[in-house]
Image 1 (cartoon, rainbow over the protein chains, first blue to last red):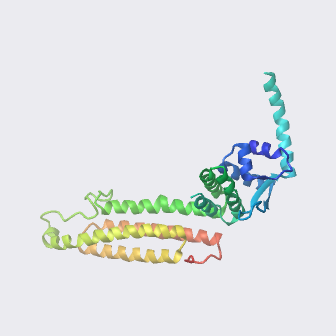
Image 2 (spheres, each protein chain N blue to C red; image 1 turned 180 degrees about the vertical axis):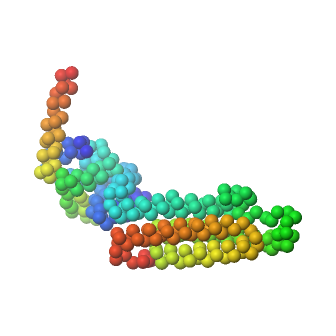
Image 3 (cartoon, one colour; image 1 turned 135 degrees about the vertical axis):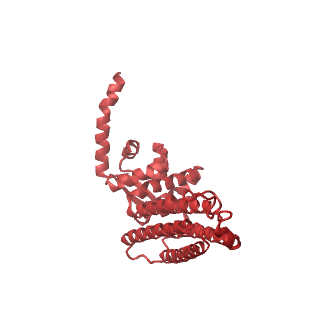
Amino acid sequence: MLALLAALSQGAQRWRHGYDLMNETGLKSGTLYPLLMRMTDGGLVESEWRQPSQPGRPPRHVYRLTAAGVSLARSVETDAAPSRGMAALA
Amino acid sequence: MARALLSLAAACLGERRRDWALAMQGELQAAVEQGRPLAFAAGCVLAAWREMPNHREGRFALANNALALGLLVPMAGLQIAWAAGFSSPFSATIGLYGGPAPGSVEDLYLFEAFTGAVPSLVGLSLFLCLLQLRFAWLLLEGDWLRVAGVASLIASATATLAIFTGVLFLDGRVAVLHGAALAIDIAAAFVSARWRDRIFPAAPAQRPC
């Protein structure tokens, strides 16, 4: 979930397709979709349908963090920063 | 193949997650362009399976599959094994029907009837096992009208078996076993139907063909 949160928090207002998120995070579809479902149910991620760019293709779902999701991503990043600093010093 | 897997994923996700099933289908073209449609679709099926315990339709489907594949099908398999001649744990004889003891009264008077009837009774036993498998399949489909029909057929065949084994002084435990299996079938169907009615109150008793 942290990898997905980190990927979504980069340019948090940007909508992303599911397959792009798989490529960005390295997660497989079997892991990505349950995470997206949980995060959407929990109000951390919002989704909407986008019409296809080429005719004959189905509409695609796009995802981005909600305000609550952005807030969580920031707090996770803040928590992780001291431990990264400690690791750099070691 | 990938489309078939995505259809399976959609079926497993159910109505509540229909949007997610469509979202997965919408990404298939991107997966095709990257040359990994099967891996993507297989992952979607895995995701759908992981999601099943989280919604009541999924729990119902899982329980039904567990009941059919974990209880009814093995039960039918055991019955087939016994009918086919493997030794039964409930009988010292080999196969379902041990012949009369040589030299006994039954052997003297019933030997010909016995040799004439046993093949038919073994056939009837195998037919009952096939009915058990059909029953499990219909239970999974939720086709309650046909479930009731097959249960009636099993009851009739079991009664026939009981009568003929009784008349021929054969091992009556065979019919008792089939009767017990039928009782388990009916109990399973009853529990499954009650549960289904709670989830889908307006569902028809028979699926449209």
